[in-house]
Length: 233
Image 1 (tube, rainbow, N blue to C red):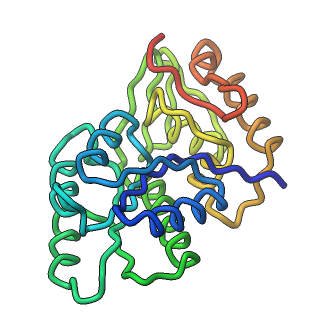
Image 2 (cartoon, rainbow, N blue to C red):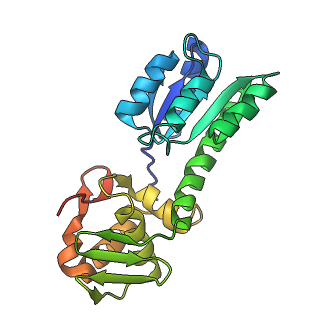
């Protein structure tokens, strides 16, 4: 069974030992990691790299973690990025402020690396599930996906899909241009308990492309990574 995670995580802390501890444990769990030692650098990387999640220390020189959170959540380009705060004991007021600003979770120092990794997994999984709670109709190219009706139209003609095919299509088409690994796709569609293999995802994609006919070409294979839905026809 092959399980690959390639989510990009930005780790922000001005203490080198903690930065390396977090980087090492998240990288060992399969994530891509970029690091910053200041709030200014964190904002720069968040805006240019658009990570899937940010692990953010609140006590930073210059622009502190709360101000970083505020700036990111007030920017439409970065407001979707989940944030896990790293806090020191006794910073209860800062924790509350951070959560009110839009942070998703927090871990108190000193922390267990295993607990931090578990929190990261949980937040990423929750964000994927929340995506399916947004029951908006997707219209892109010649394709329309109506989640409440479980209806798919290609150039106005209905297409019959299985439950899994529909979920995969809704997941990919809802974020055109984004590249997702096979693990991410199955995790978002079926949850952690579904046995994932390269073959099981590929078979679903092959069937989906065939049923979508002329719109099947919009699902692109990204070699060595996974799949994405094409942004332009």
